[in-house]
Image 1 (cartoon, rainbow, N blue to C red):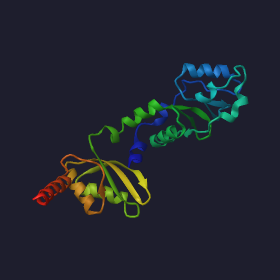
Image 2 (image 1 turned 60 degrees about the vertical axis):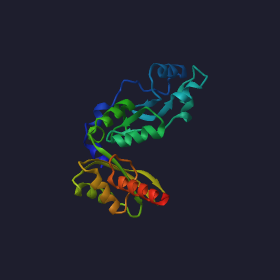
Image 3 (image 1 turned 60 degrees about the horizontal axis):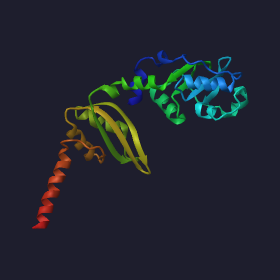
Image 4 (image 1 turned 90 degrees about the vertical axis):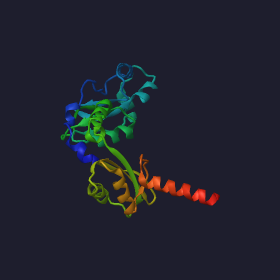
Length: 228
């Protein structure tokens, strides 16, 4: 569900940047260090004849001592990651996280380097999606992996007059799966009641949860009874 929203938002290619000049193998280490000092980026792409060879990280470059040496002698330090121009926001966020980077080189259909995505720009795009900005409830449910169904979860919400803005598997351990739902509804209690009836456990806490209030009242009554 989240992915379907992010596929339909503004054209991401509008945010491919070329403000940073890519590196070439003939560049000297001292010049590359200077480039990093001038730009707050974690990596710089190395490009020869429109072909991306990889990225040097600032961390690796800063520890090199041979200032006048060309970076072609350090190609073993290149990091290989990139995105194609059709990548979704979620795919980009994963690449950023997996590589601890704040820029991602972008390749077109011909596998030519055409620029890069900046983490700040991608986060701005993500924060403007309906998933993030619409007033909504966040519901986290849990069930055995063999029993849960994303389709069923969506149907439960819609059958109770709600609408799912997005959903994803937010946690997974052994046989248990947790699903996070972002939804709009006027009656979260009816939705939670139905989920419980279908064997789902409610993980998130919600104000005025009638079920939990009833359990609390029963517990307090039992405690008083036992103290008599």
